[in-house]
Image 1: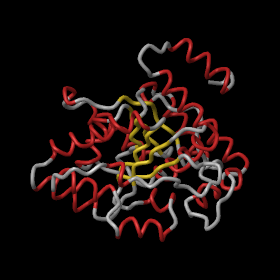
Image 2 (image 1 turned 90 degrees about the vertical axis):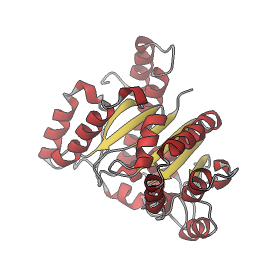
Image 3 (image 1 turned 135 degrees about the horizontal axis):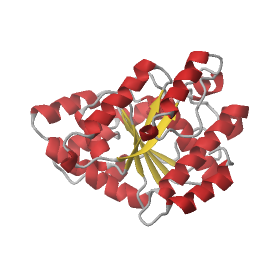
Image 4 (image 1 turned 180 degrees about the horizontal axis):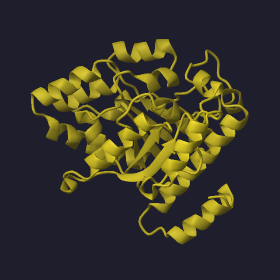
Length: 297
């Protein structure tokens, strides 16, 4: 099954890591999916969101991050296994126990510099491709939290993953990142590229008419394949990024409309994955989502 998804926008500040967190926890809590989250951002934002500080620091100091794996696999070829760097049971949601995390570290930027300096790009892509082949078989869904911009590592994820999803704020600056990604995808098509699952309109201000107007403009572009559910910029989502010292319920973390919107988004993501599998028919899948999501799709 094709189930590996790079979450990427060339523009930063679009709420990408928070969206990956919320999707992973919704997919685990509501659908029982076994989810692997790969933190491919040197800021390690999603790692901080999914782990208590002491656990993340322990992983970083003991050499159990994606950086340590890639150094061993690419720069110092050795028989390392990426599975040995995965932390299980990530998340502070008590019923989201099927999330695994491949954490990151600030040294990721230095690693990428060494890859470029030593011309190891081909080796890196080979290692990333092999990792995703194995992860595809071991997990129901793999979410890759990529850094903004287009680094050598991000390009590997975009070319080796099955799909990519692009979160964007409903404004001009953020949508420029979508344009850049679209143009990059059209270069060197023989090198392969992930298939677009669509654009998620994120961090929408529910009280700003400008955001509503720009959302409408984005949805008019059929090539973007915007997800039906937009995610609002609300306090619960901002608070969700702080790892709680004691486990909490899904509804305590994502109360009311926030949780309802995330559940609709996760359901649509699952449908789009199913509809994109070999042999799937659009008519049948459309009927399924219309039944689950309602007639407004």
